Image 1 (cartoon, rainbow, N blue to C red):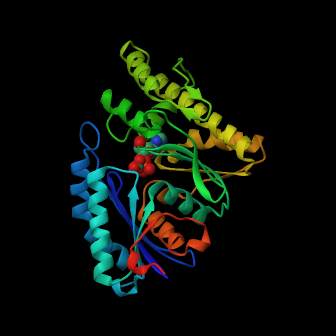
Image 2: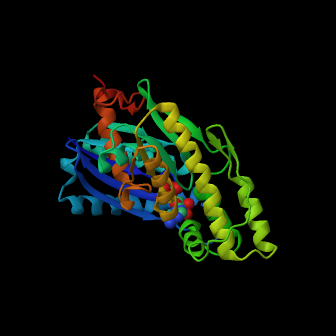
Length: 317
Ligand code: KG4
């Protein structure tokens, strides 16, 4: 069975094609970068509307397939920006109706976990999902995925991006901050907020902006930012390992690109004799293949026990 997946929960339009033997046949995507401020939901929706059709064409030519080869269409049904979600749901529905194939809405966050498992060989990991919109610790327990820890306010990626935009460094902030942080070993203190399994980043953002404006050098602020936020992420992941007794950690989401974060997590995992996994960068951020993969798994509910996904009733047996 071949599934075409449509991602578009935020500012990235992604189309992926995956088959039920676990082959990723195509992964195509484009991203909207805001010039100022954050992502506007309406702009993101407009961006998806313009890019979905050309990206489907790209994905078909990358996989040497035609539309007639597609057996299933899946789309990210959330969490995400309302107008963006409506746009991709409408596109997915019209594609499935035109092709007369089943339509499945899937959870975006589970997409990150499942593409991570598919591309790394991890089987039952504690997942640290760190992106622009989400920061979650996810574990599969008693027959379903559960969020066992998360941010209480903004996501880690959002925190890095806002800092960068506010002080005029540009977007996305993560890679810019990483570059500056590598220039120094010096740090200043920033609020470290971990409450059990949950985290808070908004105080760090306010404090970092204020310290920068009071004259702390940019490289030092960037290094402090990374050291503080990533130590918090390591702490909750370490606690999750001990709570769940799992022996695998999977890091995913766009912030997984950060070398310092990877190194800190790997060291923590080594100390506990836990295997550390990270998907190739192409599959760390939002992409259509993760949606296609969960579409396939959800269609064959017995495969993983992923239930509650929307399946066009016409195709339910
Ligand atoms: O998962 P993703 O591609 O998209 C969404 O969040 O929707 O993640 C994007 C986030 C942005 O916040 C960006 O700043 C961050 O990933 N990011 C990084 C790095 N590269 C991208 N953060 C830290 N270090 C990086 N090298």
